[in-house]
Image (cartoon, rainbow over all chains, first blue to last red; front, side):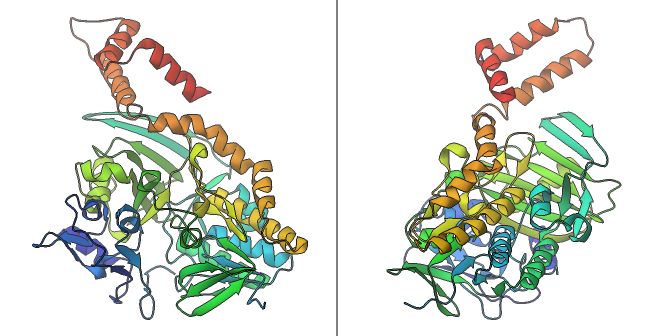
Length: 89
Length: 402
């Protein structure tokens, strides 16, 4: 996880950490498999002690994977204030 | 009813911008909505473009576009445990495909689009769409916009089609792509396609040489990720270690990619609606080439031409002209041509059994001991070991070359 965070630190956002995805906790059914955890390339989702997920919004890369993989559509895009700043350009 | 524009394009990637440029050149009053602060900021791609469509859109593109390096060398690598098979081919001066960094290319194209007169609204996220009697109303973070014709270029999540109930999320038809841009000094333009470097994932990886960086990435089907040896967030790192690309990581990004294949393509049009690029599922993987950008640009151009025809006809419900144009063009033809191999690549043993058999055969050929079999004998034995009949193998080889 540490190299990952280092990687994320190097990349993408400047310092803007405002969330740009949103997990709808009412829709999350706390499923056993948690495909969101397995398929997120940024480690955004972690198991929470109560069987649900903890969302680390600041890590999200907006790949859209969790939107696709969640069978219950519990994750969606949300627009951050001021936009997300990327390094290139 | 009054409209905000004749045409609204959702998404400012290559497909959306090409549609916008074409439509604007034809005199259509179009607006493009882009989620990011600039075009390309939200985009992730492998980093290799076949330039024929780009040159058609902008004839002076090869001189002006911020392309990285001309690809002069193609390398295919198969990993099976400790063994590795490599096949490479070199051709100089062809100028057919280039490595690119999309943040630069897309913002350049956006500038060209704005010069052509296209209105681009940045930092504008489309949150939903509704059908009105004569057009489509898009709800955005900046308010509502209505147009009689909408081009969905929003990428694989195809937000407009989905909001209107014309598309569903389908993880089995999507892949995850993860990419790093790594500092380095490439000596020539090279594209490496790599299979089997990370165990357990269904997919492959690539390394493209840019001017002074490498694009390194992995693609994997979503269903294989939970069973993979490494978690998604470590995929690229494991892959890089395996294929020997070292250096400072400048950029880390990820994106969902369409992986439909000709036989499973989603709806390309709807009333008042057209889908282009990734939104329409235009990605070709035929085992030799993996391409999406040339299809995105060409489909965007066709949607631009189609929108002119639709607007002239005044009948916005009928967008079938776009599909007709696609059928006449190379896009659907190439997708259809590639479909056999696409199916084969996705068959359960193609990317695991055959490379392993090949590795085993080569290993037997190059090791000397007291035991020795003829190549034919060895081949039959190795196929048998994996439960593949000779008939099946011939059928698969035929399917691949066909």
